[in-house]
Length: 121
Image (tube, rainbow, N blue to C red; front, side, top):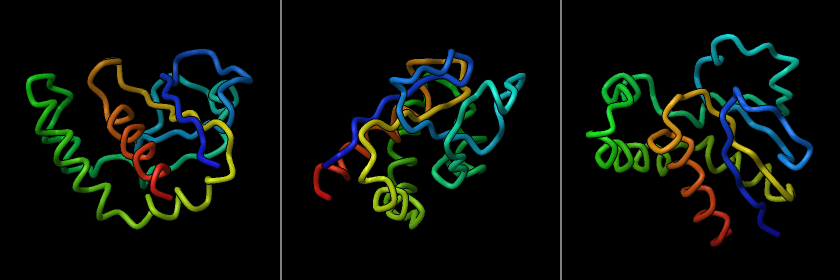
C-alpha cells in the first residue's frame, strides 16, 4: 500500500484528516508552538541542503533550476530511502512546511518525488 501524500503550511490548522504529519524544514517555523504544530515527526534531513536553500533564496525565477538541483539531492539522500521504507505503511502523510509561497516551495518537489518513489516501491 502506498500512502497518499499531502502538503500543508505549518501555519494552517492541523486536522485529523492530515494523517501522519511531518515537518520537512531544517528550521522550525517562526511563531509556531510545538503543541499547535501537532507533528508526528520532524524530518530535517529531507529538506534541501543549507547551500541549496540559500542559493535559491525562494526566488520564483530560479524555481525550475531549484527543482532540478533539489531532485538531484533527493536521489543522493539516503534519509529519503529510509523515510520511504519507514512510512510505507502510513495511509496519509502530510508534509508540513513553513514557506510563505504556496506555489514555489521545496515541499512541492518533495511531495512529487515521494509519490514517484512510492509508485515503484
